[in-house]
Image (cartoon, rainbow, N blue to C red; front, top):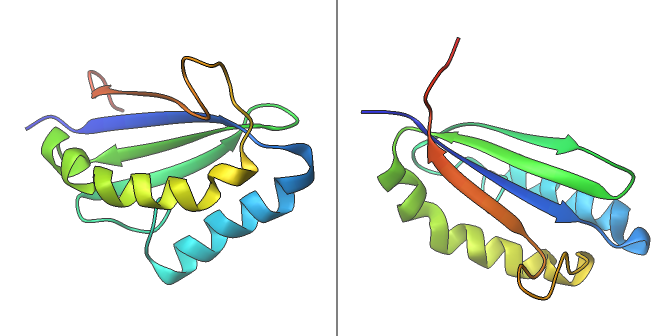
Length: 105
């Protein structure tokens, strides 16, 4: 079975940067939420891509593992939605993509 990945791009409000980082780091420490360890999640990364922009990347055992975790990830996103800028009216506060891993080294 192929591994699966998801990538989520965010733009954080300037006055919420510290809160955004704290929400993620405290969630990892507790082991729950969007950045906590979820069943089927193999690894996760938070990448700073600009002054206020970030990408979250997770590697999953399978597409079904990601699908099963989606409700909890949405719940966690809702807890930090107030700290995020709208990317576009069509996208909202996240730009998310996912797909199967084609190459890994």
